[in-house]
Amino acid sequence: MILKRGDILEFKAGKLKSLSGLLAALLKRYKPDWSGWGWHLAVVYCRLYNDYLIIEAAPSGVRLVLLSEMRGQISVHRLLPYEPRFYTMTNAVKKLNGRRYDYMAYVWTALYIITGGRLPRIANRRFTCWELVYQIYELIGYPLALDYQYAVISDFEKLSKQRGGYINTITL
Image (cartoon, rainbow, N blue to C red; front, side, top):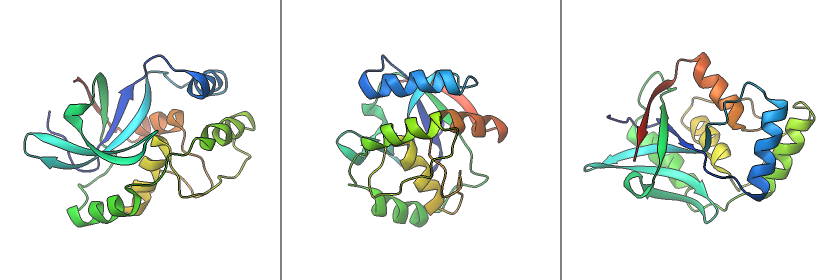
């Protein structure tokens, strides 16, 4: 399968621990339409020979990594009506690469879910993988949510279904 710049990769959830497990349990309770299949998101930055360079937020921070270094099942979502220009993606990646991981976002996102979305988003310079995807799309001119909304995987899955963004599931 040929991936395109800007494609969103949804990695199948493994066994979720601690804060991740708690947040997943809340999502299942308060967002019953969430499939529970995926947990981690990343964005395709560019093709690199026979591989792809992706940007993701991991506990070590926002980083670029080769797709071939990842393992497991991945759902590919193509939400953009066009492939973003290379320099547009490069500007977004330069702005975000190296930022720190946002552990507190788990707490704020849980409160956001419990309150039914009545808690305004707390903007900082740290990111979870969900926030990173939403921020990249905002920077390339294709926002996925309003400024005050939290980036939640259940909302992403719903949005992808509405826009016909799901393409295929691949195994690495």
